[in-house]
Image 1 (tube, helix red, strand yellow):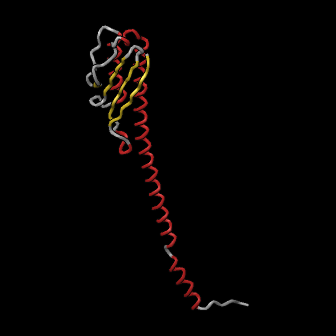
Image 2 (cartoon, rainbow, N blue to C red):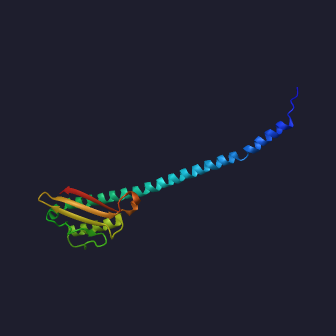
Image 3 (cartoon, rainbow, N blue to C red):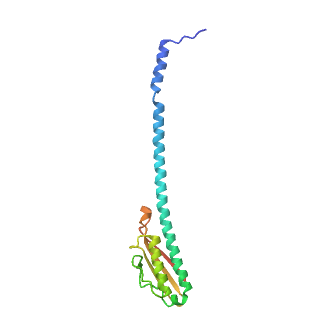
Length: 165
C-alpha cells in the first residue's frame, strides 16, 4: 500500500509552514527585550545600593569621629571638665582651630582635620563640642553634606553623640 499525497495537501502544508516562518525569531526578540529590561532594573538597584551604602559609611565615620574625640577628652578629663575642649559654636572643617601648645588644642585641631578628610565637603562639614555640669555631660554634634545619598536621604545629616566623661 502506497500513500499518495495529493498536490492540494502539499500546497496546504507549504502554506502552513510559510505562515509559521519567523515566529521563532519574534519570540527570541521578545525574550531579549525582557531580559534587557531586567538587567536595567538590576543596574538601577545596584546604583541605589551603592549610594545608600556610601551614606551609611559617612554616618559611621561621623560616629567614629565623635567617639574618638570623646575618648581623648576622657583621657584628659581635668581639662575637658574645665571646658578646654568646648567649642564656641560649630567649627567648619575648612577653618579648623589653630594647633596650640596644649594637648586639648592639638586634639581639637586633629579632630577637625579628620572630619574634613573623612566626611569630605569641608565647607559644609562642622563639628561642635559642648560639655557642661559637674558630671561632665558632653554633647558632640557633627553635621555634614550627604548629597551622595541621592534622593533617598536628606542632603544635610547630623550625628549627635552624648557621653559622660
